[in-house]
Amino acid sequence: MKWAKLSRRGAALLFGALALWWLIGAGAGGSAGRALALGRAEPLEGLTGTVGLWERLALSQSPYLRQGRVLTAARPPVQEAPEQDPPPQASPAPSAPVQEEDQPLPQRSADGVAVVAQTILPAADGSYPSAEGVYLYNRTAKAVDMAALAQAEITLTGQGKGPEILIVHTHATEAYLPTAQDPYVESDPYRTTDDSHNVLRVGDEMAAAFAQAGLNVLHDRTLHDYPNYNGAYGRSKQTVEEYLAAYPSISVVLDVHRDALVGEDDTIYKVMADPATRSDCAQVMLVVGTDQGGADHPDWARNLALAIALERALNQEAPTLARPITLRSSAFNQQLSPGSLLVEVGTHGNTLQESITAARAFAQISAPVLAQLLGR
Image 1: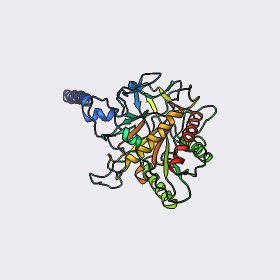
Image 2: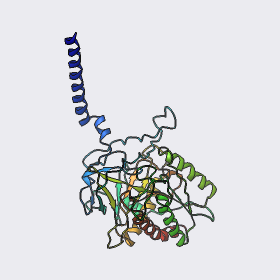
Image 3: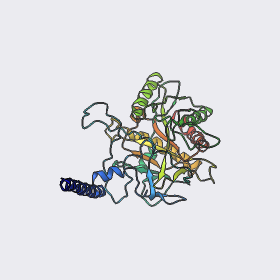
Image 4: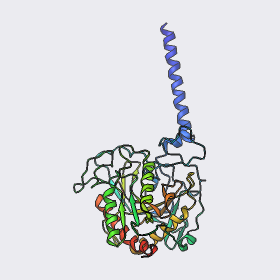
């Protein structure tokens, strides 16, 4: 009896060891391995900076750089994995759009973890398409003629008098590195419902700067990502649609977020403009969506042309304030208006004050460009 029991236990242990060996082998080259590695980044080609350790970064960004790996130029593009937001139907059609959603940030790192400043700059080696000093980080299979878009006529579609710019926040509770000057109570790691310390405060500064420049601005303060984070893009879509219906004069829609960069060793990275041009100022990043994920968004290039126009002005007035424009497969609700952009201000390693400075600079420099396009 004892020998039979011992034999069964030995067989179970042997089976478990074989199963573990198989899983490790599959993880190295199979789909399971790719799923486990989704948070890690390959070397970010074409980017240079003061640290030079981007090959060690795990991308945990909002809301578009978290899913999928950063591919080197030598590797063929892969289909990006859909986010884990529940689909609107139990069995969506194969052609249903893939909507990217953020996943919550990892738990807060232990006390004493390093926060490293990084200025993200494109290398002029041809790895990023560019025109007139504006670089594009193209994470899609779309062919982009940057030179043609840099010269394209930009037409905004607002009708009549009234609000011209709408600022919304799909992920309004995104927050920055807590400091003695700006402490807050977290609703989740690096997120808070305290409007004076989350990305709504950055939107306030942006709206104020646009208004001071003479533009008519609406700033929506809805917490689309609270209490449920997933599904935030569906809720912010409804908000934008309601504003566009109520105010046909709206020509520009800016969805303002903050980014996040975490190293494999839990190092937190913050992005900073070169202090020679802007002191104590985070970097900003414009993100443009496309129809590659399945959304009905045939005019995405019009939004990219607008992003190029704004980035060109940013580069002229405040070099290094703007990171390269990022082109993504998901639409991010930008199909609702040809003047729609997503704006990332800083990362969760930046302080609120650094991000406020960046938001103010972005709006001040962008305002004359937008005013001209609006016929002001």
